[in-house]
Amino acid sequence: MNRRLLAIAVAVVLPALLVGVAAGGTATIATEPTFASLGTPTMPFVPYQGFIDATWFCPGVPSGGSGLGGSVTVANPADSPLQGQITVFTDTPDVEGGELAFTVPARDTFTVELASIQNTGNYLAAMVEITGGGGFVEQQADHPDGASVAPCSNSTSSTWYFADNYTLNGSQEDLVITNPFPDDAIIDVSFASDDGERSPEQLQGVPVPGHSVLVVDERFLAKDEAVLAVSIVASRGRVVAGRSQQYIGERQGYSMSLGSPSGSTSWTFADGEVGGDTRFERYSIYNPGEDDAVVQPVFLGVFSDTFNGVDAIEVPAGRVVSLSVADVPDLPEGRHSVTFTSETDAPVVVERAITRTAGDTYVTTVVRGVESAFLDPGYYRWSMAIGTELPVDGVLVVLNLSGTDTLVAVKALGPGGEVDIPGLEAVPLAANSVVAIAIPDVAAALGHPLIVVGTQPIIVERLLPRGDDLRGRSGSLALPG
Image (cartoon, rainbow, N blue to C red; front, top):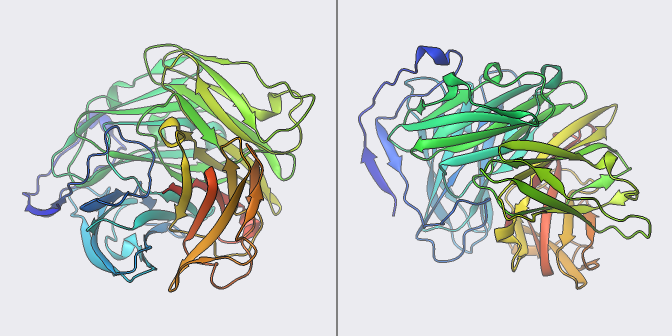
Protein backbone atom coordinates (compact mmCIF):
# COMPACT_ATOMS: atom_id res chain seq x y z
CA MET A 1 0.00 0.00 0.00
CA ASN A 2 1.50 3.34 -1.01
CA ARG A 3 2.41 5.70 1.80
CA ARG A 4 3.18 9.41 1.66
CA LEU A 5 6.36 10.15 3.56
CA LEU A 6 7.89 13.41 4.66
CA ALA A 7 11.57 13.46 3.85
CA ILE A 8 14.25 16.00 4.64
CA ALA A 9 15.89 17.40 1.55
CA VAL A 10 19.55 16.54 1.57
CA ALA A 11 22.02 18.14 -0.84
CA VAL A 12 24.50 15.63 -2.14
CA VAL A 13 27.64 16.72 -3.93
CA LEU A 14 29.24 14.27 -6.36
CA PRO A 15 32.97 13.67 -6.17
CA ALA A 16 35.09 16.07 -8.19
CA LEU A 17 36.21 13.15 -10.31
CA LEU A 18 32.75 12.87 -11.79
CA VAL A 19 32.80 16.10 -13.78
CA GLY A 20 30.10 16.04 -16.45
CA VAL A 21 27.87 13.53 -14.64
CA ALA A 22 24.72 15.29 -13.48
CA ALA A 23 22.71 14.38 -10.38
CA GLY A 24 19.36 15.63 -9.18
CA GLY A 25 18.21 16.70 -5.72
CA THR A 26 15.74 15.22 -3.30
CA ALA A 27 12.13 16.25 -2.76
CA THR A 28 10.82 17.63 0.51
CA ILE A 29 7.58 15.66 0.04
CA ALA A 30 8.37 12.18 -1.21
CA THR A 31 6.69 9.03 -2.34
CA GLU A 32 8.04 5.65 -1.35
CA PRO A 33 6.12 3.07 -3.34
CA THR A 34 5.53 -0.43 -2.10
CA PHE A 35 4.40 -2.98 -4.62
CA ALA A 36 3.85 -6.66 -5.07
CA SER A 37 6.95 -8.80 -4.80
CA LEU A 38 8.02 -9.75 -8.29
CA GLY A 39 11.07 -11.85 -7.38
CA THR A 40 13.97 -11.35 -9.80
CA PRO A 41 13.26 -8.22 -11.90
CA THR A 42 12.28 -9.05 -15.46
CA MET A 43 11.04 -7.33 -18.58
CA PRO A 44 7.89 -5.20 -18.14
CA PHE A 45 4.52 -6.97 -18.18
CA VAL A 46 0.85 -6.20 -17.55
CA PRO A 47 0.28 -7.00 -13.85
CA TYR A 48 -1.96 -9.91 -13.05
CA GLN A 49 -5.14 -9.48 -11.05
CA GLY A 50 -4.71 -9.19 -7.30
CA PHE A 51 -2.10 -6.41 -7.13
CA ILE A 52 -3.08 -4.09 -4.27
CA ASP A 53 -1.22 -1.23 -5.93
CA ALA A 54 0.96 -1.00 -9.03
CA THR A 55 4.03 1.21 -9.50
CA TRP A 56 5.71 1.78 -12.86
CA PHE A 57 9.13 3.32 -13.43
CA CYS A 58 9.81 5.00 -16.79
CA PRO A 59 13.40 5.17 -18.12
CA GLY A 60 13.38 8.86 -18.96
CA VAL A 61 13.03 11.40 -21.78
CA PRO A 62 15.29 14.23 -22.99
CA SER A 63 14.30 17.77 -22.10
CA GLY A 64 15.41 21.38 -22.18
CA GLY A 65 16.07 21.87 -25.91
CA SER A 66 14.30 22.44 -29.20
CA GLY A 67 12.43 19.33 -30.30
CA LEU A 68 13.23 17.50 -27.04
CA GLY A 69 10.56 16.20 -24.70
CA GLY A 70 8.41 13.23 -23.95
CA SER A 71 5.28 11.91 -22.35
CA VAL A 72 3.88 9.03 -20.30
CA THR A 73 0.68 7.21 -21.24
CA VAL A 74 -1.42 5.20 -18.77
CA ALA A 75 -3.95 2.82 -20.34
CA ASN A 76 -6.99 1.66 -18.38
CA PRO A 77 -8.66 -1.43 -19.89
CA ALA A 78 -11.06 -1.81 -16.96
CA ASP A 79 -14.76 -0.92 -16.79
CA SER A 80 -14.23 1.61 -13.99
CA PRO A 81 -11.93 4.63 -13.61
CA LEU A 82 -8.53 4.32 -11.98
CA GLN A 83 -6.65 6.91 -9.97
CA GLY A 84 -2.98 7.46 -9.42
CA GLN A 85 -0.12 9.87 -9.08
CA ILE A 86 2.87 10.59 -11.29
CA THR A 87 6.14 11.93 -9.89
CA VAL A 88 8.69 13.40 -12.30
CA PHE A 89 12.38 13.47 -11.30
CA THR A 90 15.07 15.64 -12.91
CA ASP A 91 18.84 15.50 -13.36
CA THR A 92 19.14 19.12 -12.17
CA PRO A 93 20.86 19.03 -8.74
CA ASP A 94 18.84 19.95 -5.67
CA VAL A 95 15.56 20.35 -7.54
CA GLU A 96 12.49 18.62 -6.18
CA GLY A 97 10.45 16.21 -8.24
CA GLY A 98 7.09 17.44 -9.50
CA GLU A 99 3.87 15.57 -8.69
CA LEU A 100 0.47 15.28 -10.37
CA ALA A 101 -2.60 13.29 -9.40
CA PHE A 102 -4.54 11.82 -12.31
CA THR A 103 -7.68 9.87 -13.17
CA VAL A 104 -8.06 7.60 -16.17
CA PRO A 105 -11.67 7.02 -17.28
CA ALA A 106 -12.84 3.48 -17.95
CA ARG A 107 -11.47 2.01 -21.21
CA ASP A 108 -9.42 5.15 -21.87
CA THR A 109 -5.92 6.58 -21.60
CA PHE A 110 -4.20 9.42 -19.78
CA THR A 111 -1.19 11.07 -21.44
CA VAL A 112 0.91 13.84 -19.92
CA GLU A 113 4.03 15.68 -21.06
CA LEU A 114 6.65 15.29 -18.33
CA ALA A 115 7.87 18.87 -18.76
CA SER A 116 4.41 20.09 -17.74
CA ILE A 117 5.05 18.59 -14.30
CA GLN A 118 8.79 19.31 -13.97
CA ASN A 119 10.25 21.84 -16.41
CA THR A 120 13.94 21.86 -15.52
CA GLY A 121 16.72 19.48 -16.48
CA ASN A 122 18.26 17.71 -19.45
CA TYR A 123 16.49 14.44 -18.61
CA LEU A 124 13.22 13.73 -16.84
CA ALA A 125 12.08 10.34 -15.52
CA ALA A 126 8.70 9.35 -14.15
CA MET A 127 7.31 7.11 -11.41
CA VAL A 128 3.64 6.24 -11.90
CA GLU A 129 1.65 4.91 -8.93
CA ILE A 130 -1.75 3.40 -9.63
CA THR A 131 -4.04 2.95 -6.66
CA GLY A 132 -5.64 -0.46 -6.61
CA GLY A 133 -3.47 -1.75 -9.45
CA GLY A 134 -4.80 -2.17 -12.97
CA GLY A 135 -3.64 -0.35 -16.08
CA PHE A 136 -0.30 -0.39 -17.86
CA VAL A 137 2.21 2.36 -18.63
CA GLU A 138 4.55 3.33 -21.45
CA GLN A 139 6.58 6.39 -22.39
CA GLN A 140 7.44 8.26 -25.58
CA ALA A 141 10.70 10.20 -25.92
CA ASP A 142 10.70 13.01 -28.48
CA HIS A 143 13.82 14.09 -30.35
CA PRO A 144 14.53 16.00 -33.59
CA ASP A 145 15.71 12.67 -35.07
CA GLY A 146 12.37 11.02 -34.30
CA ALA A 147 10.18 9.75 -31.48
CA SER A 148 11.01 6.56 -29.57
CA VAL A 149 8.50 4.49 -27.57
CA ALA A 150 9.47 2.25 -24.65
CA PRO A 151 7.56 0.37 -21.95
CA CYS A 152 8.06 1.42 -18.35
CA SER A 153 9.35 -1.06 -15.77
CA ASN A 154 7.26 -2.80 -13.10
CA SER A 155 10.15 -2.64 -10.63
CA THR A 156 13.53 -1.21 -9.81
CA SER A 157 16.66 -3.36 -9.73
CA SER A 158 20.20 -3.44 -8.36
CA THR A 159 21.53 -4.49 -11.79
CA TRP A 160 20.93 -3.21 -15.32
CA TYR A 161 22.56 -4.28 -18.58
CA PHE A 162 22.76 -2.96 -22.15
CA ALA A 163 24.27 -5.24 -24.79
CA ASP A 164 24.19 -3.04 -27.92
CA ASN A 165 25.85 0.32 -27.36
CA TYR A 166 27.38 2.24 -30.24
CA THR A 167 29.83 5.15 -30.20
CA LEU A 168 31.20 5.15 -33.76
CA ASN A 169 31.26 8.29 -35.93
CA GLY A 170 30.55 10.63 -33.04
CA SER A 171 27.27 8.92 -32.12
CA GLN A 172 25.99 10.23 -28.79
CA GLU A 173 24.92 8.04 -25.87
CA ASP A 174 23.77 8.88 -22.35
CA LEU A 175 23.01 6.43 -19.55
CA VAL A 176 20.01 7.75 -17.62
CA ILE A 177 19.84 6.33 -14.08
CA THR A 178 16.90 7.13 -11.81
CA ASN A 179 16.68 6.64 -8.06
CA PRO A 180 12.98 6.97 -7.14
CA PHE A 181 13.52 6.26 -3.43
CA PRO A 182 14.38 8.68 -0.60
CA ASP A 183 17.76 7.14 0.28
CA ASP A 184 20.86 7.47 -1.87
CA ALA A 185 21.94 4.59 -4.09
CA ILE A 186 25.56 3.74 -4.92
CA ILE A 187 26.40 2.38 -8.38
CA ASP A 188 29.36 1.00 -10.32
CA VAL A 189 29.44 1.30 -14.11
CA SER A 190 31.62 -0.94 -16.28
CA PHE A 191 31.99 -1.54 -20.01
CA ALA A 192 32.74 -4.63 -22.06
CA SER A 193 33.84 -5.07 -25.65
CA ASP A 194 35.08 -8.02 -27.64
CA ASP A 195 38.58 -7.50 -26.24
CA GLY A 196 37.96 -7.02 -22.52
CA GLU A 197 36.27 -5.23 -19.62
CA ARG A 198 36.88 -1.70 -18.34
CA SER A 199 35.77 -0.22 -15.03
CA PRO A 200 36.74 3.48 -15.02
CA GLU A 201 37.71 4.64 -11.56
CA GLN A 202 35.50 7.72 -11.78
CA LEU A 203 32.45 5.48 -12.38
CA GLN A 204 32.93 3.30 -9.31
CA GLY A 205 31.03 4.05 -6.10
CA VAL A 206 29.01 6.87 -7.68
CA PRO A 207 26.14 8.18 -5.52
CA VAL A 208 22.69 8.58 -7.04
CA PRO A 209 20.83 10.90 -4.64
CA GLY A 210 17.33 9.95 -3.59
CA HIS A 211 14.51 11.17 -5.84
CA SER A 212 16.87 12.15 -8.64
CA VAL A 213 18.23 11.31 -12.08
CA LEU A 214 21.93 10.72 -12.72
CA VAL A 215 23.26 11.01 -16.28
CA VAL A 216 26.49 9.32 -17.37
CA ASP A 217 27.13 11.05 -20.66
CA GLU A 218 29.19 10.11 -23.70
CA ARG A 219 32.38 11.62 -22.24
CA PHE A 220 32.63 8.62 -19.93
CA LEU A 221 31.94 5.97 -22.58
CA ALA A 222 34.56 4.29 -24.71
CA LYS A 223 34.91 6.07 -28.05
CA ASP A 224 34.62 4.58 -31.55
CA GLU A 225 33.17 1.28 -30.39
CA ALA A 226 30.89 -0.63 -32.75
CA VAL A 227 30.30 -3.39 -30.16
CA LEU A 228 30.09 -2.20 -26.54
CA ALA A 229 28.12 -3.49 -23.54
CA VAL A 230 27.33 -1.65 -20.31
CA SER A 231 26.80 -3.01 -16.80
CA ILE A 232 25.29 -0.89 -14.01
CA VAL A 233 25.45 -2.51 -10.57
CA ALA A 234 24.12 -0.88 -7.41
CA SER A 235 26.08 -1.84 -4.29
CA ARG A 236 23.42 0.02 -2.30
CA GLY A 237 19.83 0.68 -3.24
CA ARG A 238 17.86 -0.06 -6.41
CA VAL A 239 17.56 2.11 -9.50
CA VAL A 240 16.08 2.24 -13.02
CA ALA A 241 18.35 2.56 -16.07
CA GLY A 242 17.60 3.86 -19.55
CA ARG A 243 19.82 4.43 -22.57
CA SER A 244 19.52 7.50 -24.80
CA GLN A 245 21.22 7.13 -28.21
CA GLN A 246 21.57 9.54 -31.10
CA TYR A 247 23.14 7.71 -34.03
CA ILE A 248 25.48 9.30 -36.58
CA GLY A 249 27.10 7.70 -39.61
CA GLU A 250 26.21 4.16 -40.67
CA ARG A 251 23.46 4.28 -38.05
CA GLN A 252 20.90 7.10 -37.98
CA GLY A 253 18.02 8.21 -35.77
CA TYR A 254 17.28 8.36 -32.06
CA SER A 255 16.48 5.64 -29.54
CA MET A 256 15.53 5.71 -25.85
CA SER A 257 15.13 2.31 -24.22
CA LEU A 258 14.87 0.55 -20.89
CA GLY A 259 17.73 -1.73 -19.88
CA SER A 260 17.57 -5.42 -18.96
CA PRO A 261 17.58 -5.91 -15.17
CA SER A 262 18.89 -9.47 -15.37
CA GLY A 263 20.39 -12.02 -17.69
CA SER A 264 18.55 -15.02 -19.10
CA THR A 265 19.41 -18.39 -20.61
CA SER A 266 17.31 -17.61 -23.68
CA TRP A 267 16.16 -14.58 -25.66
CA THR A 268 13.69 -14.46 -28.56
CA PHE A 269 13.06 -11.73 -31.14
CA ALA A 270 10.00 -11.54 -33.38
CA ASP A 271 11.26 -8.98 -35.91
CA GLY A 272 13.99 -9.70 -38.43
CA GLU A 273 14.26 -9.46 -42.20
CA VAL A 274 16.55 -10.14 -45.12
CA GLY A 275 15.93 -7.85 -48.07
CA GLY A 276 13.04 -5.44 -48.25
CA ASP A 277 14.07 -2.14 -46.68
CA THR A 278 16.49 -3.73 -44.21
CA ARG A 279 20.09 -2.54 -44.59
CA PHE A 280 21.68 -4.15 -41.56
CA GLU A 281 20.59 -6.48 -38.73
CA ARG A 282 22.91 -7.23 -35.83
CA TYR A 283 22.54 -9.09 -32.51
CA SER A 284 24.80 -8.22 -29.58
CA ILE A 285 25.29 -10.96 -26.97
CA TYR A 286 26.65 -9.81 -23.59
CA ASN A 287 27.85 -12.18 -20.88
CA PRO A 288 27.95 -10.19 -17.61
CA GLY A 289 28.68 -13.26 -15.46
CA GLU A 290 31.81 -15.08 -14.37
CA ASP A 291 31.29 -18.24 -16.42
CA ASP A 292 31.83 -18.56 -20.16
CA ALA A 293 28.71 -19.04 -22.28
CA VAL A 294 28.05 -20.95 -25.48
CA VAL A 295 25.01 -19.45 -27.20
CA GLN A 296 23.09 -21.14 -30.02
CA PRO A 297 21.08 -18.93 -32.39
CA VAL A 298 18.09 -20.54 -34.12
CA PHE A 299 16.23 -18.78 -36.95
CA LEU A 300 12.45 -19.26 -36.94
CA GLY A 301 9.97 -18.74 -39.73
CA VAL A 302 12.61 -19.76 -42.29
CA PHE A 303 11.60 -22.46 -44.75
CA SER A 304 14.50 -23.30 -47.07
CA ASP A 305 16.18 -26.45 -48.31
CA THR A 306 19.58 -24.74 -48.48
CA PHE A 307 19.69 -22.96 -45.11
CA ASN A 308 21.37 -25.14 -42.48
CA GLY A 309 21.40 -22.78 -39.52
CA VAL A 310 24.44 -21.25 -37.81
CA ASP A 311 27.09 -22.49 -35.41
CA ALA A 312 26.99 -21.82 -31.69
CA ILE A 313 28.74 -18.64 -30.51
CA GLU A 314 31.28 -18.59 -27.67
CA VAL A 315 30.85 -15.60 -25.36
CA PRO A 316 33.58 -15.44 -22.70
CA ALA A 317 32.76 -14.11 -19.25
CA GLY A 318 32.66 -10.32 -19.21
CA ARG A 319 32.64 -10.02 -22.99
CA VAL A 320 30.22 -9.04 -25.73
CA VAL A 321 30.16 -10.53 -29.22
CA SER A 322 27.93 -9.82 -32.19
CA LEU A 323 26.17 -11.75 -34.93
CA SER A 324 25.49 -9.94 -38.18
CA VAL A 325 22.71 -11.45 -40.27
CA ALA A 326 24.67 -10.46 -43.37
CA ASP A 327 27.27 -13.05 -42.33
CA VAL A 328 24.72 -15.89 -42.06
CA PRO A 329 25.10 -18.06 -45.19
CA ASP A 330 22.09 -19.05 -47.29
CA LEU A 331 19.53 -17.26 -45.09
CA PRO A 332 16.68 -16.61 -47.54
CA GLU A 333 15.04 -13.27 -48.16
CA GLY A 334 11.95 -12.40 -46.18
CA ARG A 335 10.99 -12.11 -42.56
CA HIS A 336 12.43 -14.26 -39.80
CA SER A 337 12.59 -14.46 -36.04
CA VAL A 338 15.55 -15.54 -33.91
CA THR A 339 15.97 -17.24 -30.55
CA PHE A 340 19.27 -17.41 -28.64
CA THR A 341 19.81 -20.19 -26.09
CA SER A 342 22.72 -20.44 -23.66
CA GLU A 343 23.75 -24.09 -23.92
CA THR A 344 25.96 -23.75 -20.83
CA ASP A 345 23.12 -22.18 -18.79
CA ALA A 346 25.22 -19.06 -18.21
CA PRO A 347 22.79 -16.10 -18.28
CA VAL A 348 23.40 -13.58 -21.06
CA VAL A 349 21.75 -10.41 -22.37
CA VAL A 350 20.88 -10.03 -26.06
CA GLU A 351 19.78 -6.92 -27.98
CA ARG A 352 19.04 -6.47 -31.68
CA ALA A 353 19.82 -3.47 -33.87
CA ILE A 354 18.09 -3.12 -37.24
CA THR A 355 18.84 -0.32 -39.70
CA ARG A 356 16.15 0.20 -42.34
CA THR A 357 15.67 2.72 -45.12
CA ALA A 358 13.29 5.59 -44.41
CA GLY A 359 12.48 7.86 -47.33
CA ASP A 360 15.80 9.21 -48.60
CA THR A 361 17.70 8.16 -45.47
CA TYR A 362 17.78 5.26 -43.01
CA VAL A 363 17.01 4.74 -39.32
CA THR A 364 18.31 2.37 -36.64
CA THR A 365 16.24 0.92 -33.83
CA VAL A 366 17.48 -1.25 -30.94
CA VAL A 367 15.23 -3.71 -29.08
CA ARG A 368 15.88 -6.24 -26.32
CA GLY A 369 14.53 -9.74 -26.68
CA VAL A 370 11.98 -11.69 -24.64
CA GLU A 371 13.65 -13.76 -21.93
CA SER A 372 12.93 -17.36 -20.97
CA ALA A 373 10.59 -16.49 -18.07
CA PHE A 374 8.01 -15.28 -20.61
CA LEU A 375 8.37 -18.17 -23.04
CA ASP A 376 7.35 -21.15 -20.92
CA PRO A 377 4.43 -21.64 -21.11
CA GLY A 378 4.25 -18.37 -23.03
CA TYR A 379 1.74 -15.53 -23.39
CA TYR A 380 -1.34 -15.51 -25.60
CA ARG A 381 -2.03 -11.80 -25.05
CA TRP A 382 0.19 -8.73 -25.58
CA SER A 383 -0.82 -5.12 -24.84
CA MET A 384 0.34 -1.66 -25.95
CA ALA A 385 -0.63 1.62 -24.29
CA ILE A 386 0.79 3.53 -27.27
CA GLY A 387 -0.45 2.51 -30.71
CA THR A 388 0.05 4.02 -34.14
CA GLU A 389 -1.32 7.37 -35.28
CA LEU A 390 -0.83 6.43 -38.94
CA PRO A 391 -2.29 3.62 -41.07
CA VAL A 392 0.98 2.08 -42.25
CA ASP A 393 2.24 -1.38 -43.14
CA GLY A 394 4.01 -3.71 -40.76
CA VAL A 395 3.15 -1.94 -37.50
CA LEU A 396 2.89 -5.25 -35.63
CA VAL A 397 5.29 -8.16 -36.00
CA VAL A 398 3.91 -11.36 -34.46
CA LEU A 399 5.78 -14.62 -33.89
CA ASN A 400 3.94 -17.90 -33.31
CA LEU A 401 5.98 -19.69 -30.64
CA SER A 402 4.16 -22.99 -30.96
CA GLY A 403 4.37 -25.93 -33.33
CA THR A 404 0.67 -25.49 -34.06
CA ASP A 405 -1.01 -23.02 -36.43
CA THR A 406 -2.68 -20.12 -34.67
CA LEU A 407 -5.14 -17.30 -35.31
CA VAL A 408 -4.24 -13.79 -34.21
CA ALA A 409 -6.82 -11.10 -33.39
CA VAL A 410 -5.83 -7.43 -33.18
CA LYS A 411 -8.09 -5.29 -30.99
CA ALA A 412 -8.27 -1.60 -30.14
CA LEU A 413 -9.18 -0.29 -26.70
CA GLY A 414 -11.93 2.32 -26.82
CA PRO A 415 -15.14 3.47 -25.13
CA GLY A 416 -16.80 0.17 -26.02
CA GLY A 417 -13.97 -1.86 -24.53
CA GLU A 418 -11.77 -4.12 -26.63
CA VAL A 419 -13.05 -3.95 -30.20
CA ASP A 420 -11.88 -6.11 -33.10
CA ILE A 421 -10.20 -4.11 -35.86
CA PRO A 422 -11.94 -4.85 -39.18
CA GLY A 423 -9.98 -7.35 -41.23
CA LEU A 424 -7.79 -8.33 -38.30
CA GLU A 425 -10.25 -10.48 -36.37
CA ALA A 426 -8.51 -13.75 -37.27
CA VAL A 427 -5.12 -13.42 -38.97
CA PRO A 428 -3.74 -16.89 -39.78
CA LEU A 429 -0.21 -17.63 -38.63
CA ALA A 430 1.49 -20.94 -39.32
CA ALA A 431 3.45 -22.87 -36.71
CA ASN A 432 6.78 -21.25 -35.73
CA SER A 433 6.18 -18.49 -38.27
CA VAL A 434 6.19 -14.70 -38.23
CA VAL A 435 3.86 -12.17 -39.84
CA ALA A 436 3.88 -8.36 -40.19
CA ILE A 437 0.44 -6.79 -39.75
CA ALA A 438 -0.70 -3.41 -41.06
CA ILE A 439 -3.11 -1.25 -39.09
CA PRO A 440 -5.89 -0.01 -41.41
CA ASP A 441 -7.20 3.53 -41.73
CA VAL A 442 -9.96 3.04 -39.18
CA ALA A 443 -10.69 5.73 -36.60
CA ALA A 444 -11.29 3.18 -33.87
CA ALA A 445 -7.77 1.76 -34.36
CA LEU A 446 -5.57 4.82 -34.86
CA GLY A 447 -4.30 6.56 -31.77
CA HIS A 448 -5.72 3.91 -29.45
CA PRO A 449 -4.07 1.24 -27.30
CA LEU A 450 -3.71 -2.05 -29.15
CA ILE A 451 -4.10 -5.60 -27.88
CA VAL A 452 -3.05 -8.74 -29.76
CA VAL A 453 -4.48 -12.12 -28.79
CA GLY A 454 -3.46 -15.49 -30.23
CA THR A 455 -4.90 -18.97 -29.90
CA GLN A 456 -1.32 -20.15 -29.23
CA PRO A 457 1.57 -18.44 -27.37
CA ILE A 458 2.96 -15.50 -29.35
CA ILE A 459 5.47 -12.64 -29.14
CA VAL A 460 4.56 -9.16 -30.40
CA GLU A 461 6.86 -6.34 -31.44
CA ARG A 462 5.72 -3.05 -32.92
CA LEU A 463 7.26 -0.71 -35.46
CA LEU A 464 5.69 2.67 -34.80
CA PRO A 465 6.21 5.68 -37.10
CA ARG A 466 8.62 8.20 -35.57
CA GLY A 467 6.32 11.12 -36.36
CA ASP A 468 5.69 10.37 -40.03
CA ASP A 469 6.45 7.24 -42.00
CA LEU A 470 9.24 8.91 -43.99
CA ARG A 471 11.23 9.24 -40.74
CA GLY A 472 11.30 5.49 -40.23
CA ARG A 473 10.11 3.36 -37.37
CA SER A 474 10.67 3.03 -33.63
CA GLY A 475 10.87 -0.63 -32.60
CA SER A 476 9.73 -1.81 -29.18
CA LEU A 477 8.21 -4.83 -27.50
CA ALA A 478 4.57 -4.95 -26.53
CA LEU A 479 3.77 -5.86 -22.92
CA PRO A 480 2.95 -9.51 -22.24
CA GLY A 481 -0.40 -9.83 -20.52
